[in-house]
Every structure is written in C-alpha cells, then in structure tokens.
Length: 262
Ligand code: UDP
Image 1 (cartoon, rainbow, N blue to C red):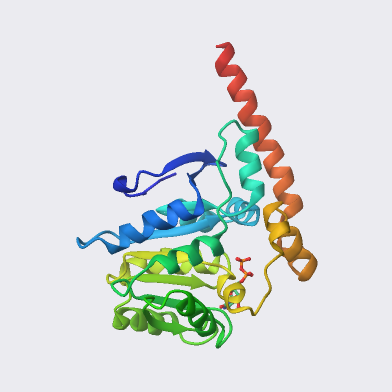
Image 2 (cartoon, rainbow, N blue to C red):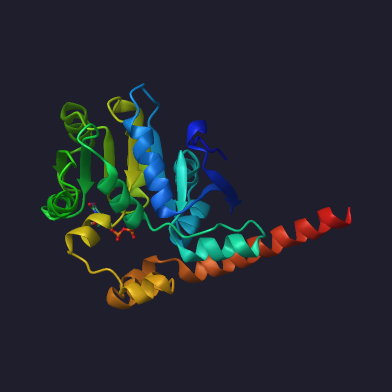
C-alpha cells in the first residue's frame, strides 16, 4: 500500500479495502491539483486514479490492477459504495469525488501555462470535450488530442512528449487507463500530472448523457448508468462487491472490537 501524495498538498486520506483513499471535496482537491501543476519547480509526475466498487473487485482478481491502483499518488473515491463502506468500517470518507467532476473542475482552473493532452474515447469525442471545456475556460490550452482506438502505445507517448503537455487525461476505461499510466508515466517526463478519467470525455462532450442532478445528489448515478446502458450490469461487479464489502466490513469491525477489548 502506498500514498505518494506530495506533502505540500496536505490532503487527508483514509484506508479503505487496503487502499489509501483521498478524503477531500471535489473543488478543494481540484484547486490543490491546479496549484501543484502550476508551480515552477520540477515535480515528480502525480498520478490520479479513481476507485469504485468495480475496481475494488478488478483489483481483488488481478494483482496488476492492485499494483496500479496502489501506485497512484491520489486515489479518489468515485463510487458511493466505497464511501458507504468507509463509514461502515469506521474510517469515514467525507464525500464522493466523481472523476468527471474532478476532471472538469481541474480543467476550468488550468491556465495557459499548463497545456493538457486528452487521450481516449471514440474518434472526435475527446476533441468535442476539449471544445466544451475551452468554451467555459478560454485559457485552457489543448496541447493534443488522440482517440482511444487508434495508434500504438509508443506513438501516443511520442505525441504526448512532443506536445509540451503538462497534464495528461486518459479515458480508456478501467483497468486499461490505469495500466497505461502506470506502465508509461515515467516515459513522459514533460508531465506533472496524469489522470484516469474513464468515460468523462463522453459525458463532457454530450456523447453520453449524465444522470439528472437529482439522481447525482441522491448518489444514484451508478443506477442511472446501468438503467441507460443495461450491458453495464454484466461488468459492474455489483453483487461481487456487496459480498466482498460485507466480508471486509465484518473483518474490520471484529478487529476493532478485539483491539478495544485487548
Ligand atoms: N475506450 C477507448 N478505447 C478502448 C475502449 C474504450 O478509448 O479501447 C473508451 C470508451 O470509448 C469510453 C471510455 O473508454 O469513452 C470508457 O468509458 P466507461 O464509461 O466505460 O468508463 P468507466 O468510467 O466506467 O471506467
């Protein structure tokens, strides 16, 4: 287990399912990240991944995924299941941080000194997301855009390196995006930050609709996504997560009461 959050960022964390998860709020975290990238001195690349019930199960099945998630500088709780589990384990996270909201909030705070590179989604989608973000933040500098279905890994790395980007956002879905970043972050020395953004390019471009705000506020975005794209249910690992979480919560509680008795 590791937490490589740069000390200066002063972000709280909680341990959930053996992962060190960021305990913060979307806009606060985005502001800290924007300041972190904007500093003049060279910094090690900061990787940001999200954790949700599906990824907890993918990690339980595949050590490479565990490794990638544990190597993250910042792991954000993008999944109400993880937040609820943290509370039941007695290590409560303050808030869910939806990856798409963090990505958008960060993009709206970046200036011309922090060019960004978007990699992922179907042809044209990330470019449309870039247009949408630029309409809201004219200072956002788009260093490059590549879709997630063309080009080999080395050519993408060359493009990022040649672009002058300081932040890379990768939307290939999980675990592909986490494995891509984990494998290649050190090959892109121009970067100060690399973040896995899942389906964010789809959501921001309007390619795929987000849940109504009420459903988001009620923490039911996951249910909306399954209802609007039923094929997701098969890959959601929902049942497996409930069983896994129930066992882990019972174990953590038993250890807690044993420690109190002893
Ligand atoms: N994707 C991609 N290349 C691939 C497979 C998927 O770029 O080979 C993209 C896909 O078009 C979508 C994103 O990865 O934009 C995955 O979105 P999803 O909502 O499934 O991600 P999640 O947030 O659930 O991980």
